[in-house]
Amino acid sequence: MKKTLGLVILTAGIALTAGYGSYLAPAYKAELIKRGEAHFAGGIAKEKHAAYCKVRKAAALKAAEGCENKKGRIKNILNPKKLEGKPPIRQNYMKLKKLMASQEALPTKVVKRRKAWVRALKLERRALKAARAVGAQGPVPRLTGWAGLGGVGFGFGLLLVIVGSWTCRMAIKDALVSEDGDAEAGPVDFGVLLGSVLDRARALQQEMAALEAPVAADLDRLKDQLDDIQKGDLARLCESGPKVQQRYGMAGFAEIFSPLSAGERKLNRLWVTLVDRHWPEAMASAEGAVADLERAVQAVKSQAD
Image (cartoon, rainbow, N blue to C red):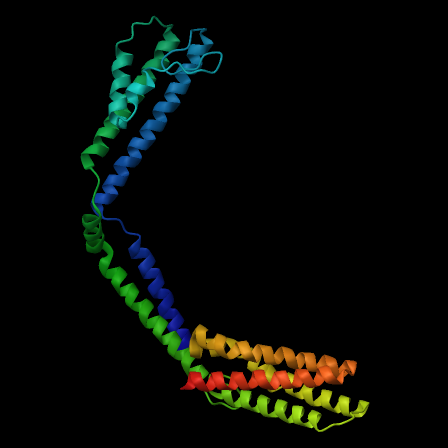
């Protein structure tokens, strides 16, 4: 229940911070609107120019004023070097001045398209002037403008995120320190389980060392004892990895589970050697598993300290 409450608070906090965080400062919003209007005006001017070039080509006129010739080359209105480095509003003015000075005789249909293009260029110039008049807002005014509009809501949402995260973490911690005997192994009883696995593995290794000439029945009995260890407490230890990481952090988790995983692999190897009746390798695997499990126990103790 506590974890569910924490998730609800956290979700509400994320929603509020996302919503209020997306607000724009009024002046910056106006700046973006003007920029957008200038951008779209430029797009319309390009469309009108393409329509003009199309009717010009249909009228069998030679390429001019930014239109392509039969070879696909563009006949520029002005030398590109003259426009290089100049702001868009200045480039627009220079193009319009050149176009207005043109004395080329054109068919009526072409003149109509040309006038539509020139009008679009003038509208683009007007939009560029409006965008320049608004200017660019600096980061500090933009931040203060946003804070005055959505800062309170964002701050409240951030508070909910902190409270929700803390509540969830406390709920997880309560689950980890629960001493319910029916619950899965958690970090509190992890050391007890690990000690139990070590004691049973050590007892198995000592029993193996006491056998001078093991027979098939001895190997089967040892394998059954090993099965109990692997399918019981050792399996619970391996499943509790996320809880151990939550309790001790990634570094502590690695320090504990590195030798524990090595011990588990050697116990798996021991099972295989018992099945294959390879006694020397079985002894080596048992001794190695005990040594790794002892290192894991020491790691748990060092983390607890």
